[in-house]
Image 1: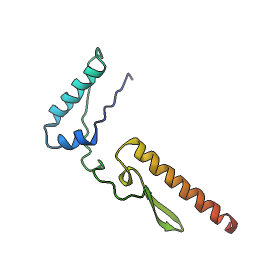
Image 2: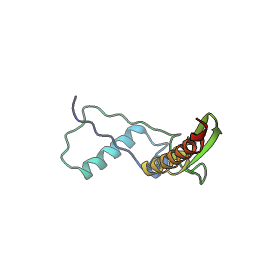
Image 3: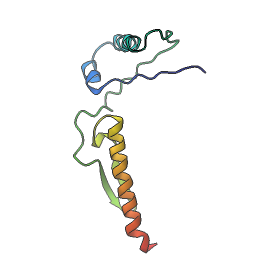
Image 4: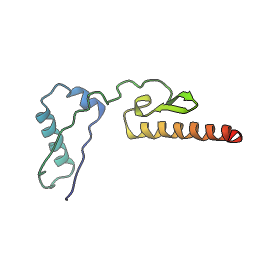
Length: 111
């Protein structure tokens, strides 16, 4: 038990530091945290997770989601289709929700 803090870098920072020693990157991020929130107690434990292949550098397309199959309904979406930020996930989720709603409405007479 206790308090947990998660730091997340920008895509640009991750790209710039992709080949830098992970311990150096972790220390830089922790130092920045101390600048932003001074006086935090030191962490008992910290881990750097490098998601090299999860950062969206160039979005897959201009569409926030794709219908891959109409029946059964299969939709591809997520931030890889928009932008590598939480709002990219929200945009894609909104489009996916609309596709599902529209599909259910159009097929409701066939149920």
